[in-house]
Each structure stands twice: as C-alpha cells, then as structure tokens.
Length: 153
Image (cartoon, rainbow, N blue to C red):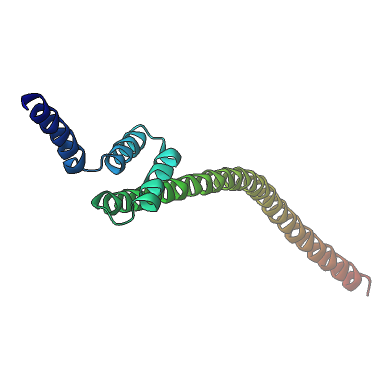
C-alpha cells in the first residue's frame, strides 16, 4: 500500500501543480511584446500586443497590452508628426534662403538704381545751372540788341 499511496500522492501533486499554476501564455507574450517595444521594434510589439488582445481579451495582461499598444500608437503618431514638421521646416528654410537671395539681388538692383538716380540728379542740377546761365546770356544779348536798336534810331 505504501507504493500505491506514494503513486497517488505524486499524481495528486502533479495534478495540483498543473491546475493551480496561472496561465503563463499571456504573460509570456506580454514580456515578449514589452521587450520588442523596449528594443524599438514597434511594429512587432504592436502585433504581440494585438495577439494578447485577440487571444486573451479578458485578462489583466489584455488591459496592460491595450494601454501599451495605445502608448506605442501615440509614440508612432508623434514621430510621424515630428518627421512631417521637420520636412516642412526644411522646405520653409529652403524658401527662406531663396527669398533671402532674391532680397539680396533686389537690394543690389536698388543700390545700382540709387546710383543712377544720384547721377541723374547731378545732371539735372548741371543742366539747370547751364539753362540759367544761357537764360542770363540771352537776356544780355536782348539788352545789347535793344541798346543797338535805340542807338540806330
């Protein structure tokens, strides 16, 4: 009877261990998913979290997997937005550089035209002075002509 009792005890112990052990499958998948997420393998981690949510939807691991999945989705969305904003910033920086080059060219043109304007004003001043001098000479000639006319009469 001792052998039979020993066999019954061993079978009972093994059966008790099997029945009392918590299901390790969702926990194992969760550990794997967390490891993938920690390694930056977000797509694989999302798949593993999705597996937990599909196969074990009513477990504590499923709640944690849902929160982790949502966090990774938020992280990926933020990264996509950062990439989009970075691309926009680079495009605007290129536009700004092009506008600065155009502004520099326009400033050069403006400086050249300012020089032309200054020369034109000098020419106007010179021609005005010459016209005044010629007007004065014409007046003198008229006066001389009038004096000559008076002397002839």
